[in-house]
Length: 382
Image (cartoon, rainbow, N blue to C red):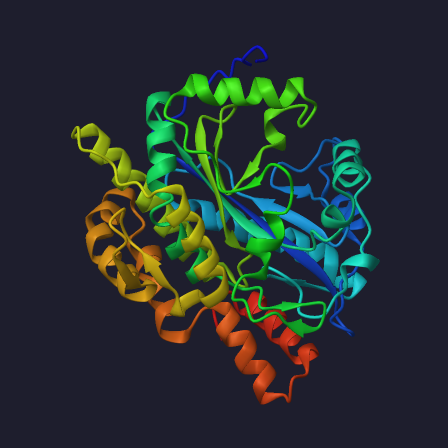
């Protein structure tokens, strides 16, 4: 057994929140992806030559990531994203580039995409080869501040009991390279092919996590903790738990809604720990099945709700949670954003709306791309 690696957990104020949103750059005429991230990043770079604090590079040159600062409320984080997007859009417009959200692009092909010029990305592709080259996917990541390191792993395990709620609501990647995959979230199953991606291990103690990192570094699987790409992972340098569950959102309203739901879940479980209550957990085999079901069936997924194997339609479970979390949302100042989850329940998740556009246009996926651009500009589901 290798030596464990110490993972100091930074001090963070409880339930502070930050959001990261990966956004695609598409050609305004063809709707296909444009390899223009470096040009956009250069245009938004501050005058002193430093990197922009809220607009950053991603794996592929067709992508930029916009992020909020460390915020107290979801509303503040969404406003940070809105301001960053305005800068990106201003730089993109003269190039005839539109911005687009979603877990995947409906018809672009992975093998024509260019990788960003950065050593960590080159190393990733060199190691993962065909699967790594296929990571033409986009996500939304939500960081929530945890004030006590001892809470991180219990809350992480509890979040696996509501994983499918977030994945189903955010599912926005039904198409891949011009074909309907039959999945609501093809991104979810693509991403877990990377060697350190997928569902996290259910560690009970922080020392077990440190031993895992030590073993992975000793055997050359990773060089640093950031290369662990779990769907739910601690972020020790920020003092947060990072939820990487959601597909890339197609509009700002849904970013706020999904992030508010995530924020409330974490605060709810944190409050249970404060009261000395046992947090809910699922056996790993049920958590894995729930991930597959929500990726496959989205809003129609029948999920496993407890270790007894009881089942429920995910949308019925979401409705119950919205009622339970209402006091939490009021405390966190995100009542309005949490209520917007009901917009998704009424209008359908993005994968459903995309398929509806495809049906209305005889399967023409360029119409789907146009609809995604339109939703992004409208900042709400259409």
